[in-house]
Amino acid sequence: MTENHEILCPKFIECDICETKRNEINRSRIMNLFGIEDDIHILSKHFYHLTISVKPTRETYHHFSLDSWKKSGRELINGLSSLSSVSNRKWWSMFVDSGVRYYSVNQESDDEYPTFNNHFLFFSDKDNLDVRMNLQLKCRLKKISKHLNFKFEYLGVYNLDTIKDSLKIGVSVNCTSTPVIKLGEDVLNEIYKIREQRPIPFGTKINNNTGIHQPINSI
Image (cartoon, rainbow, N blue to C red; front, side, top):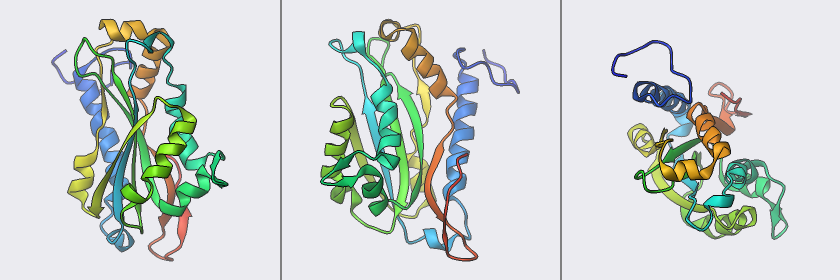
């Protein structure tokens, strides 16, 4: 398919044009949350990008599931599971002001299993969270699943270009490759769902007129 078309193809059709369009739409949704020029409160914030990932292996593919991976986002932000008597929800809110969560899937080659990524782009009043949250984050994720890995990056203070460059959006998977077929129909259907997944805002946003923090409504 090489011609432009106004209506997006169904999610189960691998169309490069539609995938590019979906990526552009989701990138715009995310940037609109952080690209408000008159929001002076955001200029002094510290920005971070956290990625929680899982990848099947030769040993695990036959019982591979995305349940714990999908749960990791909800559990970290709102979960009541606790460590040292502090719930995930309370621990997360101690450090994180506001952000957005989104998914991506990438397959390096047709011979490899895809990597499933749960991304968190957020800001905070606090510096060095990539160090201060690291140990607890590792322990809390292990309670969800021992197969989860994470990468925590500090992006610096507010910079729109840096935020845009940090985004890792999209589904790049060959659904007819042997590794993907081995994962089964349930995982393949999840990949199709991820292809149409919108970014999910979380936390609070400062009202410019009142200076009061207000909950963000989901997109």
